[in-house]
Structure formats: structure tokens, C-alpha cells
Image 1 (cartoon, one colour):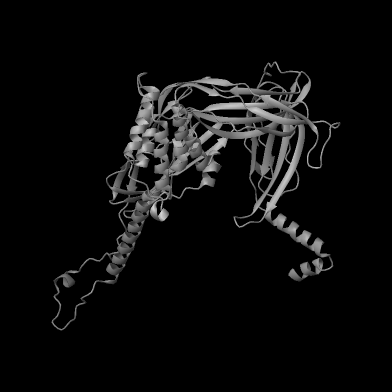
Image 2 (cartoon, helix red, strand yellow):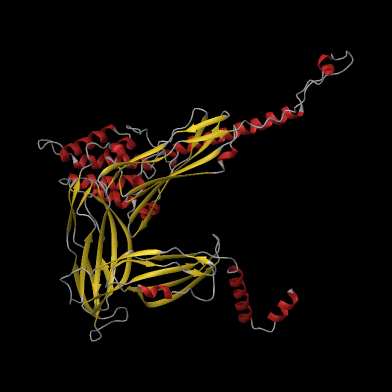
Amino acid sequence: MKRALVKTLLPFPRTRALTLIFCLLLWAAGAGAGELSASVDRTRIAINETLTLSVRYDEQVLGDPDFSALEHQFEILTTQRQSQFSFGSGGNTSYTEWLVRLRPREKGELVIPSFHFKGAVSDALTVQVTDAPDTDNQGRQVFIETDIDKSRVHVQEQILFTLRVHTAVVLDKLAMSDLEVADAQVIKLNESQYQKTLNGTPYSVVEIRYALFPQSSGPLTIPAQRFRAVIPDPGSRSSLFSRGGRQVFLNSEEKTVQVQPRPGTVSPAAWLPSQGVSLSQRWSRPLDQLLVGEPVTRTITLTAQGLTGAQLPPLDIPVDDGIKAYPDQPRIQQSLEPEGVLGQRTESMAIVPTRAGKLTLPPVTVRWWDTRADTMRETRLDALTLQVAPAPDTTPATSPTPDSANQAPSPGSSQPDYPPHWLWLSLIGNLVLAVLVLLLAIAWWRGRRTVAPRSTEDDAGKTGVSEDRAFKRVMDCPPDRPRQLRAAILDWAPLFWPEDRADTLERIAGLAGDGELDRQFRALDNALYGPASAPAPAVTSCKERLATVRGEQRHWPGNDGRKLKPLYPD
């Protein structure tokens, strides 16, 4: 077979042979059954707008799915197919994707059905189609719309802010300034493009969506954003490096949101303003196989809609007195979706039963504030009972006979003065288990004391702002703007202490381990939220103290990431 294949390839030119080999590799890669998935760039659109449907099959294939079922509720404008196949150190990547641009035929909740392809089935999707909004900008070639999902929120509650640039002409070099909002954390969610028709005029729309998290109560002003672009003009002069045209400048509308303080009945530790909170758990192996002394890993994940990963608190995970627990470092992450930020905190621990029988794990409870219903809610994992079997006993089950029980060793016989073989195995096994438990304990202890070195690039990738840039904003605050200083400090601290809950001035002072900084923070809050007669805070002195603390902890001897003991531990 191999000789026949070689003889077939030899007459071909090298390019054809390589192409044939590559096709064979593609065929081999696509021989297995792949998965089919579907997604849309937006789930809520107007009747005069378009959306893009993405259908992906995770193998290289020939043929296309049948999209005819879409035509009942959508008009199919264009269909584009693209494929990718690559080799890399992280593994091979292979998929085929179809991009379908759709225009809705009717209003309401429309369904994108499941697609069947090569034995795989995608999930159905729903899209909410509304009336076309009234606008005073109809007839203009270029205009901007702004939108906020809420006009009244609580402190640290998510606000969705959307900018839409409409253009009926071709634009070059479209640019805008960075969105910066005082007293709020700003996260860019996504940027998309689609088509829209107003009074028979087709528009191309660039939509940019942000999530804002206000850090203090009172009116929150979202400033107007300035856009700059060039409308090409064939009759104007152009150079080798730029096309001629007319520059246009656009300003968005300023928006104001009323931010309410945290309700007095809710403690700071339980303040989690979210649209939904869930708890899930998984185990490293089945729970019907638990033995005394053998570890099993329990992983619990806290997920919250409309909260960043840094806002999620440590979980209170109690255990039974017959269990030893060795927690691992928590994993904090967040995903950015068109509907907002989705925060996750995952905590794992090794559980080692110390006795046989029934052991109970108490419930795990998280209290949070439901922003839709404006009420306090509770999410919990129910208590769990574990059945633990004793460690296997390798002692031979022998019963002494009457003769052997009463028989005394003869004077001339020799008795062994060392333990039997099974006892040596048991001692060695227990010693290995003890060493493993000791190593787990040391790893856990070191993990609690070690903080990963800060990476400016990582911080910038997660939040859009580097730690250096965030601290420069702190130092650039004017002496007469204490509120701006407070917001800048709260933006900077989570980047400087990424593994800790540096979300309040009190916690920041505790992480810094500096009593003078704590007094200055109290004076800052007293001036902002205390009586009108409170003295003005020393903004300059506070910034100088922060710079000293930052310099000391960034250049700790050995650069091992250690911190001072917090003044206010959790």
C-alpha cells in the first residue's frame, strides 16, 4: 500500500504532491464527528436592523448546512463561508464557519432554529425584535445615538452604555477618545457593525458597548464622546499615504444616572448587586468510592451576572469535624458579553476523611442583592452527606486452631523477631500518605502566602487599563477634587493587589498595612460623606503616602510578592 502511494506521488510535481498530502491530512482531521454551534452578534435588534449569525463546525468539511428554515422569519442577505486549519504547539485548530447576515421579517421573539449537519445538532437561539426607534437624525448622513439601560442604579451595580455611529456614506479613519467616567469603573464589552434602514436610507452602524460600575452615590455623569472621521472626496487632493476628503467631528449626548447608596439593612460583606447568582460544584471522582485517608477534590464555582470577578467575595465553605480540608488558591475570572460582564470565582479544596461512617458537609450560602426586584436573595448549595468506607485492611483473616492456640513454642524452635510482610507494606503505605498530606499542607500554606507577581500587560488585558496608568491617574488628581481621587484609588487598587478584594478604602489601607494611610482615608470619606463642617482632606499628603506604600511593596526584598499583614483581615 505504501509503495503504491509513493509511486502515485512520484510522477506529480512537488507542489501537487504537497497539496495532495495536505488534503489527506485535512480528510484525516475531519474524519471524526465534530460539534456544531451557533451564535449571534446581538440578541436584541430593531425591525429595521440586521444581525449576523455564526454557525461553526469544528472540523474541515465539504458541503453546507441547510439554512432554508431561517426564511420563515428572516430574510437571508448574504452567506459567507470560511475555514481554518493550523498546527501549533498548543494543539491543532480546525473548523469551518458560516457567517449569515439576516434581516427580520417581523417583530417579536423570533427563533433561529437548530441546524443539523454531519450528524451534529446546534442549539436554537432567540432574538428579540422591536419597533424602529424614533429619531430626529433621519435624513442626516452621519449621526450618533447614545443609550443607557438604567437611569437609576445602586452603588457598584452594572450600567450598560451604548454608542451607535450611523453613517450613510463611506467613512475613513473613524476614531474616538477613550471613555473615562469619574467615580466609575469602565469596561469595554464589544464593538460590532451592522446595517440599518431609516426612511428608505440604508445606514452602516458601528455599535460600541460599555459596562460601567459606579463607586459612589450621587449623580453619575457620562461625558459626551468626540468622534473624528474623514468622508472621502474624489475631487479633493490626496497624497501617497492618505486619501483626500472632508473631516467631520461628532459629539455624543451627555448622559446622567442617579446612583443610590447601599441599603442600610445590607452589610458591606453581603453587598453583591447582580441580576443573577448561581453556585455549582464538581468532584474529582465519584462520591461512592470514598475511603478513610484518601483525598478527593471539591470545586465550587460562584457565577454572577453584572459583576466583575474581583467583586465576588471568598466563599464560606464549612466542613465536618471528621474531615481535613486543604484549600487551593482561588481562580478569579470574568467574561465580556454583549449583555454585560459575567464574573466567576472558583475555589477548590482537597478533602481527606479521617474516620469512617457518615460525614456531613454543611450548606454553602451566598447572599446577594437582586437588582431586578430590588430585594435581598440567597443562593445555596444544600448540605451533603458522604459515606466513607474504612481503609482496606490487608491483614490475613486466619482463625487459630485449638492446637495452635495452646501450643507453646518448643525450646529449640526459632521465632521471627521482625514484623510480617503485610505490616511492612502497611507502614510504607501510611508513610507515603503522610508525606503526600504534608506536601499538600505545605503547598497550601505557601499558596496563601505567595502572591503572583504583578504583570502590567495582564492587568491591561483584563481591564483595559494598566496598573502604571491607573496610578498615574491617582497622582494627577487636582488638590481640590477629593471625589475624583477616591474613584481613582478604587480603580487602581484591584490592579495593584489583583489577588485580594481591594474594593474599599478600608480594605486598601489594610492591605497596605499603613496606619497613617488609614487615617487619611477616613478623613477623605468624612469630608465627602460626613457633616458639612468636616475639614477638607489633605489630597496631596494622601497621594504622597500612597506613592510611598506602592514603592515599598513593589520593591520588596527578593521580589517574592509578600505583603504586610492587613489591618482589617477578612
